[in-house]
Amino acid sequence: MSQDIAHPLTPQDCLVAVMVAISASDENIRTAELVKIQSAVNNLPVFADFDIDRMQTVSQIVFDLFEQEDGLAALFGLIRESLPTRLNETAYALACDVAAADGSLAEPELRLLEEMRYELHIDRLHAAGIERGARARHMI
Image (tube, rainbow, N blue to C red; front, top):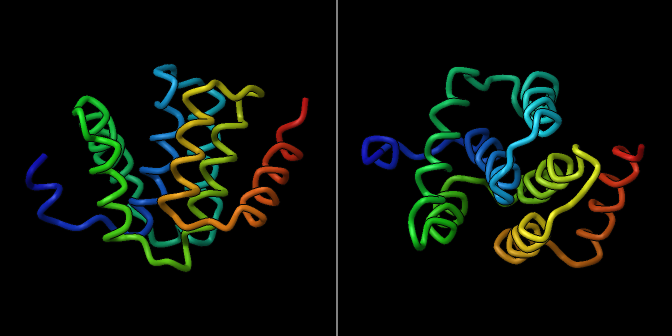
């Protein structure tokens, strides 16, 4: 893993990491969440130049960090270092979409979304709009 950290994450890597992190936060990665991540990577313009082979590497970085005591702080450190501020709301929106994909939000997902709002400096009003949009897109 040290070689991964030596090479900074791309902005797209950071977006994937946020999606994987929210999916893994409740220790139960659901198929609906994986499909949502894959769909975002395959269809959103921000991922146009993304090397799909990086998904496994980025996912493993997240899993490795989650096994460490201060892994979440380390993950946010990497994201702050590599994600342009203009993509903070995009990252939060993607996290909300993945969290909502299976139709329910577990307490660990809600806590991580709250932490993401703080770490990504998402204004509460903007966050509410993003969250409402995710809820509306994933109504059953």
